[in-house]
Length: 169
Image 1 (spheres, rainbow, N blue to C red):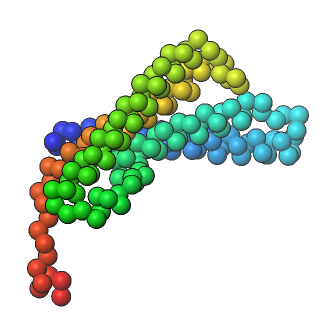
Image 2: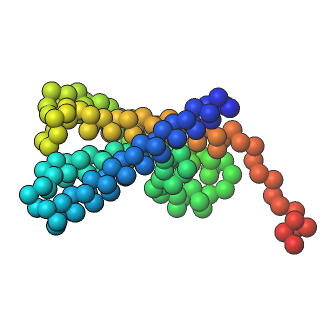
Image 3: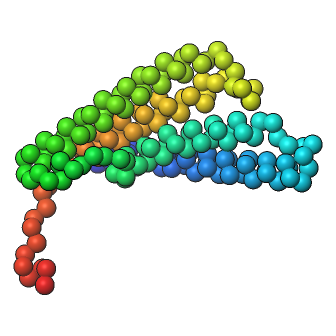
């Protein structure tokens, strides 16, 4: 499990780095575009909107993997929060299984999308559109891995002991 946690940490750092890079790229290009559009309209960047869109796509999918790792993803827990003991464990496991199935679907559809767009060029940049859409299966794969690790971590962790009355006071 320790080796799995080390890999999870490396995946988390990679996703964080890519998210940060995409956000900095988005803000930097948009700032430059606004400046040029207002100060020197002849020098406006025709590719700026595309770059910002692509940075946003990458930041979204890498950020999703970060959210899964840190358990900040959207989850409907109204049922599992009201259950106790074995029923709560089964409910959380069911939630993780449904989320995993959706992530696997996202990954497979994302891979198909990358394959379909591998011969297309981006609308604003001279790169293959597949590089843009690669964010979908990459983010899904990172999220799948992080979901498996966090789920294992939750279920392999020893149960917490209830606090003693003296500890509370």
